[in-house]
Image (tube, rainbow, N blue to C red; front, side, top):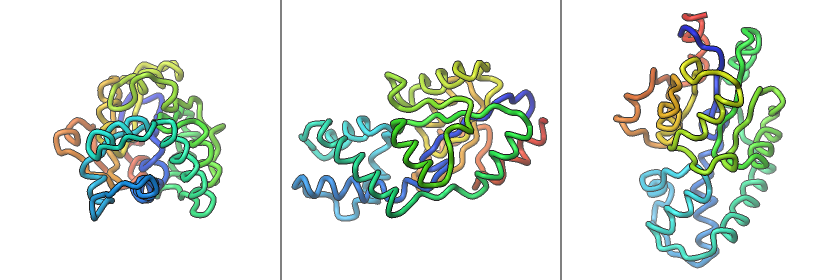
Length: 224
């Protein structure tokens, strides 16, 4: 890839394996609240919920399941459960991440994080996985934007904080909302599917689709 000056990475499902337990935690919260849920909630969740920020996830749950509790109550319980999980079952870096970050550093390419998670949650995940936010030139979390992914605002802001034109930025994403956001911002995008379903129409918007992060270095070397 030619003319790439920076790489922006999503966190959940792209850098870290944090998505697998998400439906289980949401299920537990809703069961505690007294709701009856679909039998195979994990399968139902990934087929019906494509939100990336907790308030968007909750809005979709309200629409599809008739959830009525206050968003702030749900959010407080949700984030505490996530923090507890990170202590007992720390997230792991996805295959190839550490090698990729070292390569980007050696090539003097700027790096940034663009996530729909809150900054405190990103920090907890990184600490649990043995990573540091200090290694990145910019970090944009879900609270920095009014309109989260799939709107392009998050990636537009991240490129602006890096001071780099989106056309010279490579984005690594695992989800449809992330791909749509990055492409909408004008970035070149590689899809690295995780456990969520990817719409074939959205996959076509990506520059490439690869199976893991360790395939990114050869792609970058082609243009460096």
